[in-house]
Length: 294
Ligand code: SF4
Image 1 (cartoon, rainbow, N blue to C red):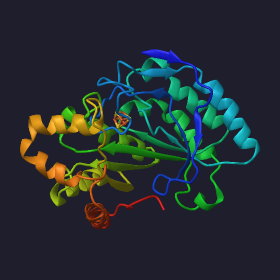
Image 2 (image 1 turned 180 degrees about the vertical axis):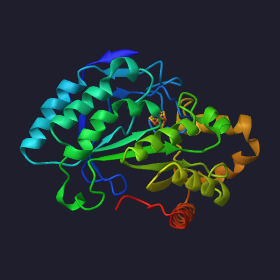
Image 3 (image 1 turned 180 degrees about the horizontal axis):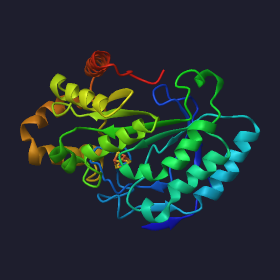
Image 4 (image 1 turned 60 degrees about the vertical axis):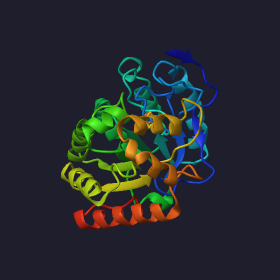
C-alpha cells in the first residue's frame, strides 16, 4: 500500500450520468483490492494484483473540504458518486477510515451521494449516511425523483458464489452484499442493485437474471440496473486478457462465443445490449422494481 497526496479529489463531470445521476465523483483510493477481472481500471498501471499496488489518497478529506466549500458557495450542488474507479469500502478502509472522513466532509457541505459498493463494511457508516440522506441539498430537477440525499447501490456480476470468487476474488460474496443491502433498505434508505456487468452466457440468461431480480426484491431492493460487460486491452493485465484467461481455464467452450461478441468493440453489439435492457426491464416490471432511478 502506498500513501499519496493529491491536488484534486472531486471530479466534475461534463454531463450528468443518465443512469447514476451523479454530477461528481470521488475516489478515495487508486487501485482496488477486490481485483475483479473485468474491472475497467485494469491495465498495466496497477498490475495483476491491484491490491498490492493500491494507493491511499491520504490528504483527500482536506482537499475535498476546499473543493466542496467552493462548489457549495456557488450553489453547484449535485450527486457525488462514491466511488467510480475504486471500492470505497475495501479492507484497508477499516484501518484508514478515509471514506468515512470523506462522508463527514460531504455531510458538512450537504452534498447528496450515490454510494456504489460491493461491501457490507458500508454499514459501519450508516449513521453518517442517514444524516446525509436527511440534510443533503439536491439539484432542483432531482428533488422529486429520486428525491433522496443518499442512494445505496450494491453491484453484482452474478449471484453464483463460486463464479463470483473466480471473477471478483477479493470481494465479499454476493450473499453478504444482498444482506447488507437489505439492512440499508430496512433502515429506510433508497437501496438497489446494479447487475453490471451482466456476463454473457454466464449471468445474462432469462433464468439467471430472473433469480437475481427475485432475490434482490426479496432483500428490499427498490431499483435495478443492468449493463453489459466491457472488455479491452491486450497487455497481460488488461481486462480482456484476464477475462479470456479465466474463460480458457473454466469455460473453454465459451471462448469462441466471446471472441465473436467482442470481435470489434470493447462492448457486445448494440443488439445484445438492447436485449439485455429489455429483459431487465421486463423482469423489473414483473417483480415491482424500478428499472432505474428516474
Ligand atoms: S470492486 Fe469495482 S473498482 Fe474494485 S476491482 Fe471490482 S469493479 Fe474494479
